[in-house]
Image 1 (tube, rainbow, N blue to C red):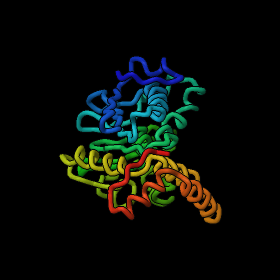
Image 2: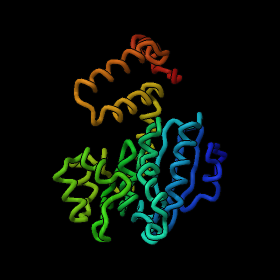
Image 3: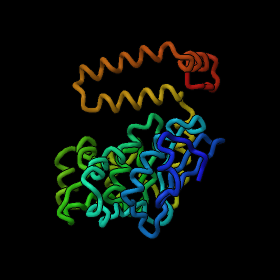
Length: 268
């Protein structure tokens, strides 16, 4: 366990089925699902994952967060028995917990191999970037249990691929292979399974090279304007652009461009 601090510190003790690693030199944090063989995500782990993202968002050592898993599968989904045992109040918080990657101001990457089902898929959909492999299958299989996705899965998916494809995935409990997910725009890359780690590393380093302030601004703008009318989205973009024009990072970027050198961004 790392030395993370958070106002919900007690939640970060004795992590349930996952671990956290911080590489300060590479400005990277990894949340690693680890409950072999299928990395089932418990009800308690959902609360802990939320707290972990909130703590990492406040950690100055971290620029980029990666969600990955040990073994051949990202996650086969949630603890089904836990749903029947949880209180209605607890169940009502599930979507808020799983949306933690989206609320996090820093870039979040989901590295998906093997099964990425149910809440594992929903957690990945809440991330900014999904990297799939030729072994990946995405699915929202809740119809097989007489249920529907409950942590934002159908809603986020519909925003990405439209209502027709979402109905095809949700109402038929279809498994979508990584290549098809890439073709549909769910995943940003689909690589050979052996290349997942290297591809993830490369994306982390690419994102670290940009201004932290510009990255945070872009993420929040895109999230806030996702379901806004075009005129409102353009207005919001203009305000964000105007604010960044006065930043130290923008000045550094312009000066580096004209000086034909690599910019050194400081996030201010």
